[in-house]
Each structure stands twice: as structure tokens, then as C-alpha cells.
Amino acid sequence: MATSSSTQLEIQLDEDDDLIFGAGSGWVEARTSCEHLASLLSDLVHIPTPDTPCNRCHQPSENWLCLCCKDVLCSRFVNKHMLQHYQQTNHSVALSYSDLSVWCFKCDAYLDAQVIPQLRPVHEIAYILKFGQAPPVRTVEFPKAEGNQADATSGS
Ligand SMILES: [Zn+2]
Ligand SMILES: [Zn+2]
Ligand SMILES: [Zn+2]
Image 1 (tube, helix red, strand yellow):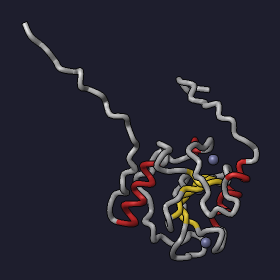
Image 2 (tube, helix red, strand yellow):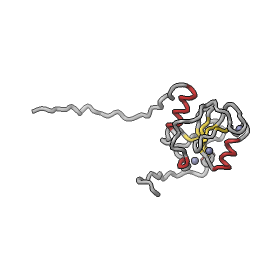
Image 3 (cartoon, helix red, strand yellow):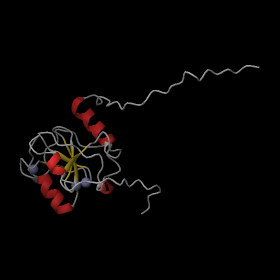
Image 4 (spheres, protein in one colour):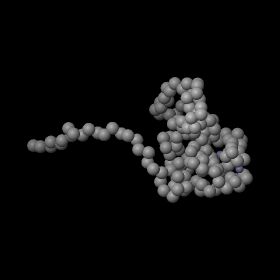
């Protein structure tokens, strides 16, 4: 392990997560961490535009961008080319050009691109490419610094 700081969080993940999430709720909680981001490209600044067709079958829309090689491939609801790509290359993290969600095949879950630092830039770039503007900032509530007693009495 070359990581300088031990950022391993001891999260007790229950095996029966699926009982809480997903089951009929329609909303599946996106993961805020993923162990498979090491294979992500470092250069995700220059990415294909969201209207790029599938590289295999030329399906024009609703495609996925592989974040490991920038291949653009269609979804499992079309010709499953992104799924095949994962099975052939082990590239597991992809960004949806239809709703800009990020999916990890190995986690079998969506990833919260606005929370995960490695994913935030490419999500923002894809958003700008798709909508022509930056995504709305999801503000994190920081407690206000109580600076009432900070009267700098720099006298004498
Ligand atoms: Zn395809
Ligand atoms: Zn790939
Ligand atoms: Zn993962």
C-alpha cells in the first residue's frame, strides 16, 4: 500500500444492503466510494461529446463513456456494448451520457460523481458538454465560524 494516510474507513457494510436500497423504492442510493477507480484515466478533461454514437453499433444516443479508455458504447438496454466492454476489458466505471450518472460494474452500483473526487471533474465536464453550463453546486453545509469574539484589539 503506497497510500500515505490510511483513509480506509471501517464501515460495517451489511450484506443485506439490498434489502434497504433498491427494493421497489425506485431510488437506489449512489455509493460515495468505489475501490475500482485506480484504472480511471488521469486525463478526463477531453472527452467525447454526449451525442457521440456507440463505437460498435452507432446507436446515436443514451450511450456510456468508459472512464478507463473513453470508449463510447451503448447501454444494456440497447446492444449491451458497454457491458461487453466491461466483460472483455475489465473497465468497470462508466458515465452515462443520458443522465450523467456514473456506474461501476464491479460494485454493481451507481457512484455519486459529485462526492467522489476522482469523478467530480469528468462529471462536471460532461454536464457542461451536455447542457452548456456548469452543474448546480451542491452546497455542503459548513457550520458558520462563530467569530464574534474575534475583535482584534491591536492596541498599544
Ligand atoms: Zn452499441
Ligand atoms: Zn474502456
Ligand atoms: Zn466499484
